[in-house]
Length: 165
Image (cartoon, rainbow, N blue to C red; front, side, top):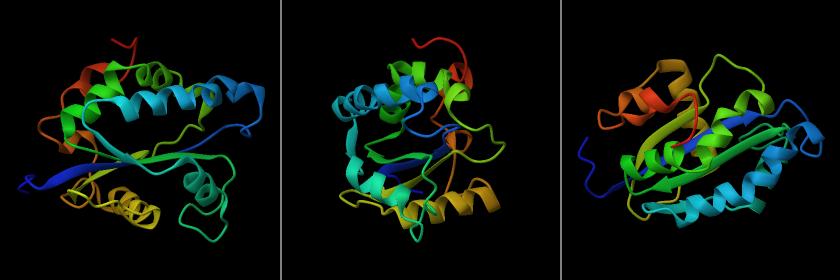
């Protein structure tokens, strides 16, 4: 695909082990504003679905996320792969990623999906879930993919575990 005229959308989806107000996820909950603030100030950041809209969607039993009150997800758009990679693997986000097993239910399934969107486009949660399911059912392809499908993504190979740079 010709990426000119496109940005990279990403949607990650997890289910917390405990309710949002449980002290066992306090470190995660207390860090959300910090992590999201760093994302929004990062070079290459374009847009993120607002916290209130995401919270409402996560709690809506008839919505795209099925109303699980422990859902924790993010939908954002980035200028390019290097910008998203830098945020994920080279900021405080990495410290939270390294602790995911403390806070999220263990799954052997897709947690992240990415896809290209035209510049200026803002994906919906329904679209994000559709892409998420497509990746889960069919694997990487031009419409829905993970890190391994992106030829110019390298950091995920070496920085998935361990300390943040």
